[in-house]
Length: 71
Image 1 (cartoon, rainbow, N blue to C red):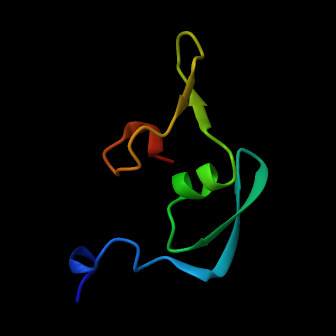
Image 2 (spheres, rainbow, N blue to C red; image 1 turned 90 degrees about the vertical axis):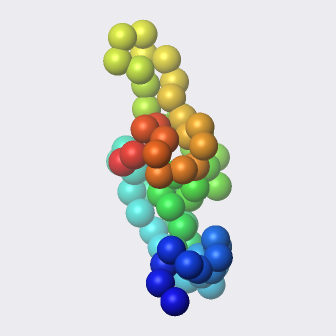
C-alpha cells in the first residue's frame, strides 16, 4: 500500500513527539503531522504577513495547494 492509498491520519503517530523550531521558537508536534497542523495545535495561527500591508496570514485549508501553508 503506498502513501496515496492510505486513509488520512494513518501516518500520524501521537505516541512519538517531535520538537521543532519555527521563527526562532520551539514547538512540539507528533510524528507524521504537518508543520502547519502542529503550529495550529500549539495555538500559532498567524504564520506570516502580507508584503504590502503586513496583514496577518494563516492557514486557510490545511491542503498542500494552500500557499499560506508552504514553509
